Amino acid sequence: MTAGVQVDDALRDRLLTVRSGIEEACRAAGRNSDEITLIVVTKFHPASLVTQLAELGVTDVGENRHQEAQEKAAELSDLELNWHFIGQLQTKKAKQAAQYASAIHSIDRAKLVDSLAGIDHTIDAFLQINLTDDPGRGGASPADIESLTERILETSTLRLRGVMSVAPLEEPAESAFERLAGYADRVRALAPDATSISAGMTHDYPAAIAAGATHLRIGSAITGNRPDAR
Ligand SMILES: *Cc1c(COP(=O)(O)O)cnc(C)c1O
Image (cartoon, rainbow, N blue to C red; front, side):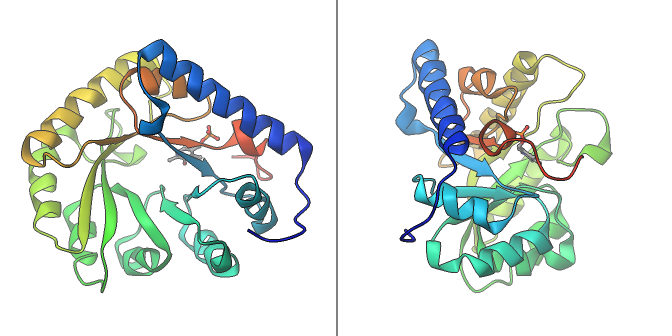
């Protein structure tokens, strides 16, 4: 905690609103909110916003661009936050990302797994699965789930936590997350400890909770609109 951090009232309110939305969705789904990790996605926002979030008790933040994440994590190393890398990751940047990220949610190909085999510590790994037919969206094809799961399990520097997905724009989140739950079962059949599901963003997190998500990645509902249009 940093003494004397001025916290924006609107930011506090939005965080409280999302936290109560998570409680409500858990109640509706008959789940305990203790099972849920809230990752606040801070991409495009300055380090000062992350400092305020830490002051508000946030422990986990998510970033999707390596260089930006690396800079913020270095600037804020005193805060002891868990940095989650959630964006598409170039193979040649993977080792660098593993220096600040405690978890990489976007593991989607064998080359990326192999490039993380050489790091000198262990990080959490999520197997990202593409819920669309468009390979450009990121994520492994469902056909590759078993082979990638095996490959991660053979890599001692990676602790496989479970699956990760982004819901497609062109489909109701409910059916997409239902499919993801089935993919999560396939991973768990090979890796019984990989029980996590990283899913749920600003507009679909209640549906993700209903479908069993354990790690929510929520940005704009908490941070407000991102400074850069995207
Ligand atoms: C930006 C982003 C989020 C958060 O999106 P919001 O709609 O702002 O909540 C979650 N996951 C990934 C992979 C992202 O890139």
